[in-house]
Image (tube, rainbow, N blue to C red; front, side):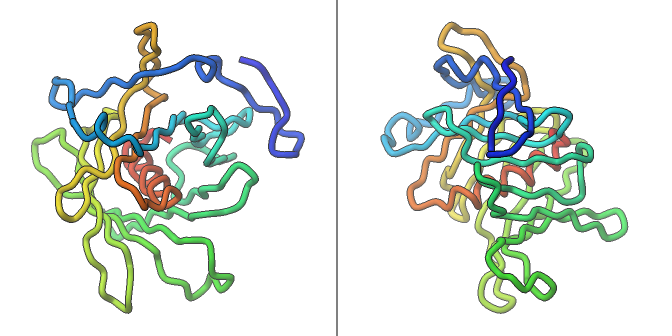
Length: 225
């Protein structure tokens, strides 16, 4: 690890050595390798590397790198893991989404606010997410609804994964594969830790910042960040 200055401030950050190598991805669902032909057929697929750590020393959070190894998105939480509220930013620190946990009794939902409106008091969530309760199952699913016109919220995305596993996939309302997260593996066959994963966006015309906000929400549910 090498400490550097970044973001135009005096924060000390760590640059992980694995950024300097090329990767392939490994995914496991139900103990079997997941195989989706469209992942190789779609030449426009976009791949991000998600590191479930903050680059800032003594901070918690998330760092997302693009295919060129550049920081694309980040979350820097100076408090602790599993916060009730986190802030998704770009490299320069521009606030993109606020992801907030909303608890009612023993139930826990998540809301995401897009940081465009200056009036933050009366703004409505851009999306809402709810876990699907399953008894005696290690499967983890949650439905995401975008809050569109008035109260007309329609199901847009579903996350499918397993408790304690970083591999998951995102489906659209028609069951089509939108994105898939897999544990990273180097080109030399060395498997990286469970805090580093490859996120492949398969569909075009996706709002990357929205997908990253949803991924952030999912990782918070999994207590990874």
